[in-house]
Length: 410
Image (cartoon, rainbow, N blue to C red; front, side, top):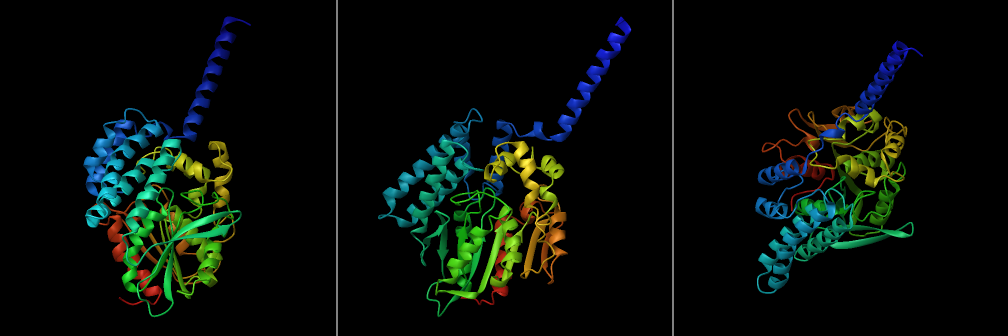
């Protein structure tokens, strides 16, 4: 082999190697753009100051105090820092329960929210698991002050149990309508219970539950995991306080996927379904997944790892690529079938769930659907200061559910 041939082969090899690197980087175009720790801290404090998810209700001073102890991206270090701040409020609450119950309750709320951010987005380490356990403890301590009370329900399910929270209006004259509320990827039934307490004065109860793969759910995400919610509906049918003919479902983000699916497969048992930013088809396709999850700046951090942690049989990215498309409602031949009446909520600027999935749901099925689409909104239709989460919930979701459930003001 002469020197010119050898040179050409080396150049060709380098060119092929270069192409391989280009295609590899194209497969994960945003993989290098995850926020650094300093960027996470800056963004989190900004969100706390502006009442933005996932720091709604957190005091920026508490967030800054925790961040002062966090020097690396280690999950246990993160959890320990937030637990240290929350522990102080938890201890104060315990000491004030009898002498100053209002202050104790406020401290429990504060501790719950700080612990929750300590386990966010998912409890993927021993430290974050401890933070999550403490969040549940603090929330339940807060809920002890509620009137009407919160009932912790445990439903036997496939050798384990479904844990949910049931709360019913006080002094109802008969069976009441009810909302089955399903959490998202990183929200929990505790968050839903706090929010949906606002529907009680309308004579409507709620049952809040963690979605598959999240919180205390007994199973992970799979194409058949909706059976968990069917079991919940079975249970609700046994409660004499619940009007079986007036049950609705509400799902937020990933929970909206389940809400949409239930609107189809449980149409006969549901009066209505409201869903915020529901994934349906494009969301589950490889190209969209790889281009939207990694480095997504609308999500604070760890979007893709959080998703991979909740899906059955997924241990790495290859597993995710293989299994995710099977969750598509088109792939499951469900989209287009009859549905319960639906409200679809979302934002055109959503970078987490494509707006085309919402339009696909709206144009499918057998009955007219209602929509609230914010042209300037992101995920869940949020728009900072204009349409924050609590305003959408209070002005859009609750009135629609109350109307569909034929409930009245208390």
